[in-house]
Structure formats: C-alpha cells, structure tokens
Image 1 (cartoon, rainbow, N blue to C red):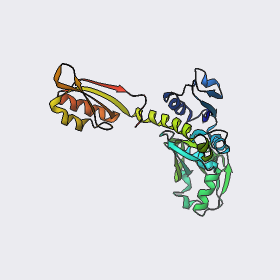
Image 2: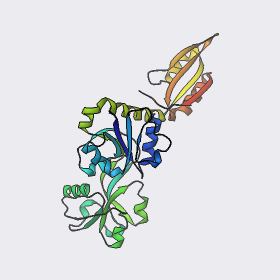
Image 3: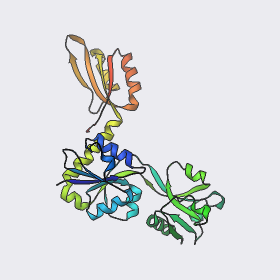
Image 4: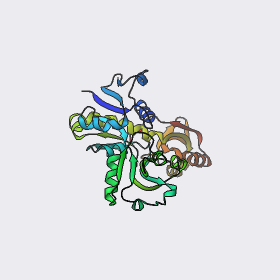
Length: 287
C-alpha cells in the first residue's frame, strides 16, 4: 500500500521540501513541477503538492499519511497531529505587532476592544484569551502589515522572520505567540496502518539533513601520531584506520566530521605530518 505524502505546492516551504525528497532518493521524475501529484519512480510513494495550510486537514482526514508543513499552520488548524521530526528550515515566529506610534510595548498594553487583523484567527484568539484581553479579530488572507495603515485594524498578528517588513511598515513586534519551522507530520491512524513505511521516509529525510552538515575526510598519517590523530578526528565512533600496502610508517585514516571543523582538522593533520588529505561531500548519513 502506497504511502501518500504531501508537500507545499509553493511559498516559503516548497523549494527546500522538494530538495529534501529528491536528495533522500525519492524520484519524482522530470516533470514533477507541472503536476499536482507524482508516483515516485520504483517506490511505493505518492507525493501530492498541496497548499501548506491545507495539509494538516488532509492528514487529519486520513487522505494523506504524512506531510511537510509549518508548525504554525499545524497549530492553527487545531487538529491532533503527530510531529515526526523538525526540518530546520522555514524558521519564523507568529507575533503581535502594533504601529510604532501607538505606544504599545507589550501585549498587556493593548486596549480591550482593539481590532486585530490576522490569517491565524484560532491562535490569535487563544493568545489574547490567555492574557485576559477582549479584542475583535478580523480574519484576512492578504498582507497583514497594511491593515493598520488602511484603518482596518489597530494591530496585527502575523509571521515574522527578520522583522524587516514590519519596520518598513512602521510596525513594532510587541509579543511572540509561538516559534515555528517546517516539520513532518502524520496522524496516529496513519502510523497504525503504515508505521514502518512512514518511518522509512522520515529516516531517509533525516539522513540527508545529517549529511549536509558533515564531510568525509581521508588522510595518510604517521603511525606514530595515531593517538593525536584520534583526538583531532573523533568521527562518529572514532576514525577508521587502515594499513597502507608497502608502508609500515603510515596509515590511512577515514572519518566523518562536521563541516565547521574541517578547517582546523586539516591544518592540525598537516602539522602532524599527514599527507594526501582529502575531503568529500556526503549525500546521506544514517547515524
């Protein structure tokens, strides 16, 4: 039975989500960008391209088994979903913002009766109830930042990344409702039916993410310096050491290290007399 998977069809989450699938070995074919759904080549996986905000509802209804969407959208939907893993992209926060000239510095400063424009009515209602504020929520689907200027609302609740858009529109962030990033979601019912297959898909994606931050390093090092080399290259479970044919004084050392450590590791190895130092990119890493 095929695993039905959904990814955002456009927007801030689409490109990276598709990249992770392709790198994990899920073959979408050459014309996936023109289709609403694709059956992966030689794999029992169907990938559907849906609006990110609709994916939680399809998961909850059992129409799809697994989906990539934002934590903010999953929370806003109100459905009971099961998060399988964070994807470490699409970082943002859902925040309350007020005009800079309003004098509002925090959520508690917002007057009762204020009009709040947002495309996240459920989370907004829950937040203001939690701080004891009675506000009027205006649900919108377009750019929230312009609403106070048009007189539609007094404040807004919207997603914020760098905050530059707020500043351009003379708005100031006054309260954070939640942090968000892209994540993989499923439901309990799908896990009961296709748990092993879903786990395989998630493991493949996680192996791609793990590999992107690592490099495979190889070097020939003096056997007498092996103890020092092991400190430089701890690797996942320690470096792999191999004998070199015809050379009793040198050994070949292989290790997987973090990308940020490559510069120092290479220079430390050179100082120990290492030769033939080589670093390679890794496609997938199962830890």
